[in-house]
Amino acid sequence: MSRQSKRDMSVEPRNREGRMYHVALSEKEVGEIAFLPGDPDRVPRIAKYFQDAREVASHREYRTWGGYLKGKYVICTSTGIGCPSAAIAIEELARLGVKTMIRVGTCGSISEKADVGSVIIADSAVRLDGTTRQYVMEGYPASATPEVVVALEKAAERLGVSAVTGITASTDSFYVGQGRPGLKGYFPSHARGLLNDLRDAKVLCFEMESSVLFTLGRLYEIRTGAVFGVVANRVNGKFKEDAGVEDAIRVAVESVSTL
Image (cartoon, rainbow, N blue to C red):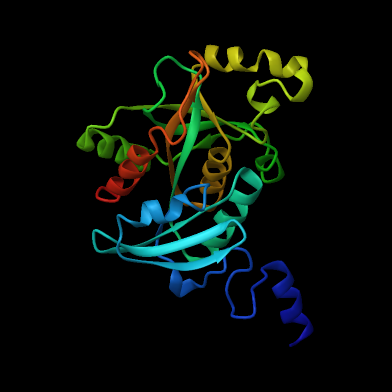
């Protein structure tokens, strides 16, 4: 191997089989549309809606299944928790040729408009993460692709799923970063007012990946969208594991009909 090729491999590393280093996929194993749940266990749940579904790769937090929807080959790849790991998946899938990425996740509502068990469609994100700051200035907007947002909204309407569209806030911390006290009551002043400040700004929910998806989508000209099942509501104190997730999955899958 030449010195030049060694330098190239260090910039865009591949494994021994020539697949992207983290997601363990090659160009021939992806389609133009990818669903991006955080949880690896959610991948086969989404893939059950595919025809000829099969597991394609599994490496670290990145698990991928492929199959067909409406005659199109699509994939579903988990991103793990948070923007740093999601950015790796987005970077590598984009380099392999994926053109549309739809996050299918969970969130905690901070609004009366979206109770536990409902669905939120994000059209933009407050960038409370650190990853996007390494890509672009802080004032740069994190916004989904309008046609993907509309496709998700139309899908929810066709399926009779209760969905609210609006702004999410993406954080790097599930506890203090989302206005929850840390261990032994640790609660810095900047975190105490966060929830109320965001509610006053008409933000609908907290989650942990959409800001980097939307930001990189704009930078790299990838179509992006995000839909969440609401598992918690910070206004009324409710929590139910997996609430709204199946509806969010159904909405994401149905949106391909329009896309």
